[in-house]
Image (cartoon, rainbow, N blue to C red; front, side, top):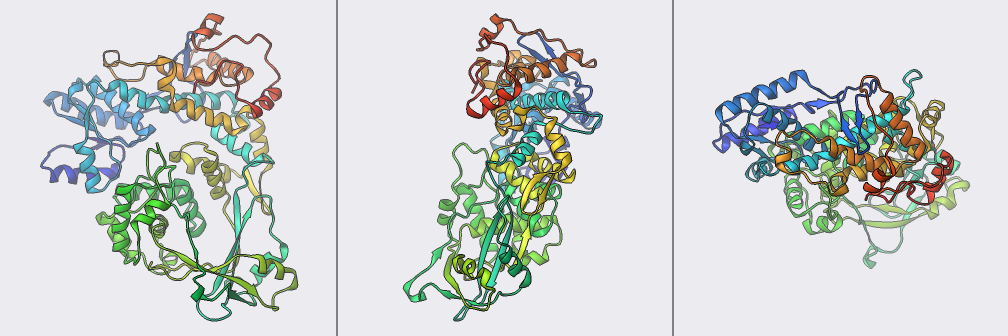
Length: 609
């Protein structure tokens, strides 16, 4: 059996042993065949006008592929069944195809190879995946189509980086990076939250304090007097008091609705802001928690949950001693999105999950000993609270003790107090002014704008912040001088998020372009068809401005190591691929981008999706 990560071996072995099955579990430690980290030389060849995409720069990882080959030879010799149990995502599909390639090269019969699709690392989840494994005989084409998205994306991103990066000046250009920096630089569009002001005040009658929260959005500075007040009373209560809007007997409650599960971005962002856990460390912690069966799949865009997941959260809530958890409320508050490949993040009632649930208690923020504790607390609390009936009392600030400059603002703010609602951890938010770490704000932008994929969100957000390309100037997220220089190196089209989104969409649907069909007799040696990658790349290139496309093709053709050759497509080739010749000369790049702001690029034919 082959899995991706070393940390999953023990869980799979335990299930196999429990089922009376003998065998070895081997980790690939990620990709077995990949491009080198450096972009130079390119190592991609484009052959013919179709084109066929060859990748001579790809290399087998010497150590890890040797381990897989040795196991493959042994399986071929004994006729053993081989199960590929890589993750259910683009990268897992690519790695599965890499493993299959080595298996067939070693002489393993295709009829002896199966694919298991694990969605959780609990004992039950693994057993379910193992029982539902499918033979790959007659399904190699399906696996190739599943893996195609990752391969097309990798080729495209490498070609973009190689063409427009400036290694001599240290300026790196990437599809997601350029779109992210372009979004930060844009004067209009999405304004991320860059901080908050929280004020606490005593109740005018009795009971718990009230609190008011003012989110601060990039470019919209809060009143100076309000900031000064929060700073002056940091950690305590501000002057005055808050009076209930009306007597409790009137039933004036504000039910807190809309709580949903964390996805990868919001979980990492919360851990960064409240526990100080770096994004890369947080992503590694989520992976460890997943491998030990403590949380659900860690790389997800979704914030919803299905019926089976709700059962897992209900059991976890019971383990934490939560009173009043309502599974129906959770299902209604956070329904899983149609077509979502994964649910949001939630705790699992495995042995490790149960141990961690029992550890959660009041004021747990101060007791997080490491990144794993922090991420588990973030994930578990949000999931459980989304299923609790949370009713908040509303109030209004009254008093004359506060500075006159802020009295009007205090009276207009929304004040709430949230009674304890059956969870064994605190809800208190202290008075203060907080600015969010830049990397956590960039993570929010990536998620909101649909840039990149959950597996690499932490990398895309961490790098620009670590390189100081983006900074907070007061309350405004802005590019630094080197950030502006880096953005200027990118073509105008890649500064627009829609180019990055288009490439993601075309990559995801590459297998459906041009009526691609792969039969097992054509794929008996596995691997990836150069024609398939070529179709996806062609669809992407024809949606880019002429000068950008030509620069990328010229860079490939000029690359000495790749010895790339690609002739410009003739009119007949354009028609054959759904493209029409451009009757007029290409416009200036700036004009092209302005056009793209109003409509999709159709100069090279209709969009392929």
